[in-house]
Image 1 (cartoon, rainbow, N blue to C red):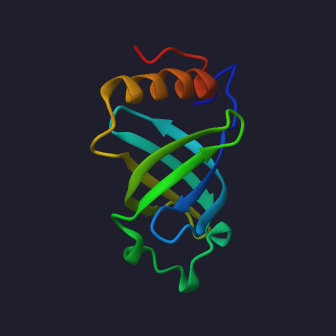
Image 2 (cartoon, rainbow, N blue to C red):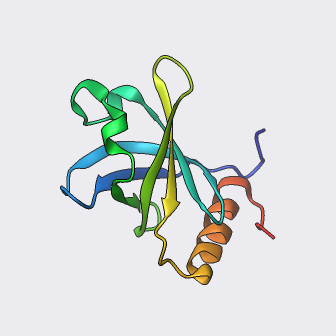
Length: 118
């Protein structure tokens, strides 16, 4: 579904373990209280042999360049949508306070859809 005020939010994904950039310029697709979903072309991944299973549970930083805001989470799922497109589910860190998650939802859902999340 397309919304009138829809804005593409670009996200860079970096491993907190190795400090390697995993993905350049993924697109933020969805934000919930549990985490975020980003979409990227497989060729954007800086991962040898595209072995995504080894990355599950990796702590990551998502940097939103439009807002200059980092979010922190854990890689939970990789979902191949098409031959060249992959969606990545990232859960917020377990110790992230609820107000942090709610502020993220409000800011990002408003930017993506022009809607409040409540």
